[in-house]
Image (cartoon, rainbow, N blue to C red; front, side, top):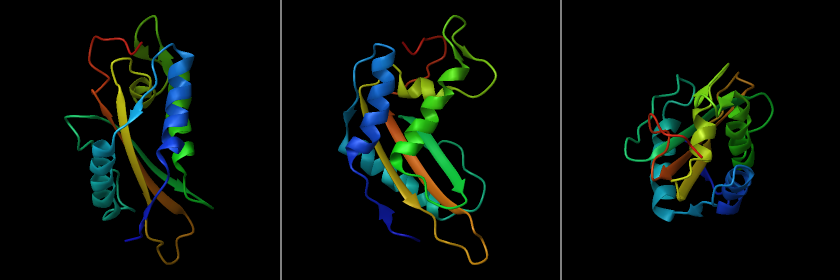
Length: 153
């Protein structure tokens, strides 16, 4: 297993809070407890890096998972958050639904009632003969968002 990446909270918060400001939602605060829990989950996922991404393991908290294979480089915290935010194009505020693609990670990023976030990421071990790089990034949110029948903002 590869040592975990240590990216400062600002790398995660910047993308989250920029997206939240665009829809008039207060900024998130960093939560060390959520970061530690996210790190535990990342460590579990590293055991099966080249397998199928598992379903959410965090029923208490909101969870965004980036399980990304890239040809040349590992995915940074900023790129993971930016990827979730690109799902904005699929969120239809009028119908409060995703149209044409997944938008649940985006709606969790901008969920109004969510006040705290903690994230972790790590590189999967390199595999001989495999050129692709794999990175696992997890952010946990409290309170949890994406509640059925509620709007994110």
